[in-house]
Image 1 (tube, rainbow, N blue to C red):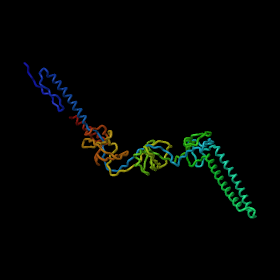
Image 2 (image 1 turned 60 degrees about the vertical axis):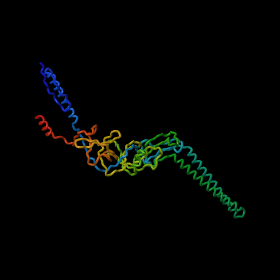
Image 3 (image 1 turned 30 degrees about the vertical axis):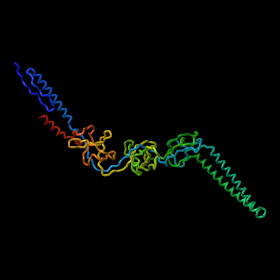
Length: 400
């Protein structure tokens, strides 16, 4: 005779299966199944509890303040316009002498290059001969003038002959003046064969040696001299950002060797006009103090632009960028609420918030990476936990 028994199975809030009516011969199997099911439910509940554990985060308050925009640009250290000298031959010539080598210092008036230009010397000699010829002609004209006047006084020569003699003297004097001017021009041209330093500086580059033949072209320079005490930065700023650049605005080098403090700069000029189709404009910046840079060194520059006052600011690390969207996580009780925000100006430390956050609200600045909207959080204040209190909690747990 069969006797039916009913075994109540374990119930759970997570949907564990309820045991049905089984026979007496199967009670052992049912008991094993119940134990296994209870263990699985316990494991699932533990995992869910662990997944819902609060995430530690650090927060900061949104505040009202002022912020100045920054323009980031790439530039090159160059000598100032009047602190650079490029030596080019006045006409095709042979280099006779270059007294200085690269890196040598020069003083104002020092000889930099001597050129051999035979045509210039020949022109000086030719013009000197013209001066002598004109002077001789003038002497003859004056002698004829004296003779004609004597004849006129004696009644032998006519007045017209005296006037002609006077005109010949005037023409001869003009010819002498022209010949002397031509000779002076030839001497000046010949003097260009010797190039001297126009300021104290350094030989930055030597392109030729004595004996070389050079052309009178910008593409064939002989020497480059610069004054290392008068350097500046020429930065390329996008044309769309050019209205934000103001002459006199402060700036600084964004990256400095050895991690030192930023070197101060100041905007000294921007172009009054640009060529059509130009994507960038050159902006010149002067060093606030003499800087030990070499000409031609590339640098990164931060130029201060417009300033916004009485605006909402948050720390820069609080902003979360996802594609074209910008958001922040705001503390809402014990949870993190994700909010879309509209941003304005930004610098290295702060970001202007135009909408989405109010002054005084706490925003998450650390720990928000990958954080879902509505996740539970715990605020990390940076304080170390009390070791004694932690030990007491463990003892209480063991007693239970």
